Length: 170
Image 1: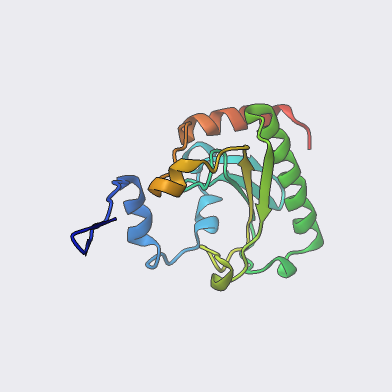
Image 2: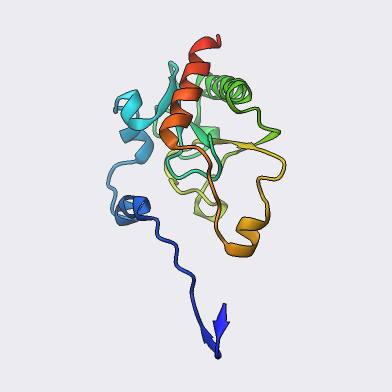
């Protein structure tokens, strides 16, 4: 937006991100290593397997954005053991089933960002993103205004997905 030749920024207040921004480059301990030691409710851990776990992203791209991470601190997917890799993909499958039941999305983005250049926010601990998508969820609002609306609270998303995950067998 420009007014009289001067660039004017639109400001959106998001105070919940301050805690994240404040510590992102100062964290001595890996996020995924710390989360796995927390209680499920405190960390939004949806599922715990033998080698990997699923956790809601507290800074989601979309409602229900979940990450599947090995307990072991490894930087890249090729460093995972066969057991870790197999269980990670089984948990991805389980999370997709739960998301279909809870939210009925039209599709999914599933991906792994390895290294900062690929967009990894946590470079040293590989994890798989599972992002549910709906036709029309990329509407005019983010395009025109630069804002994205997430219509369900993180705590409610957690309750719904956790309930579905508990009812599905791996």
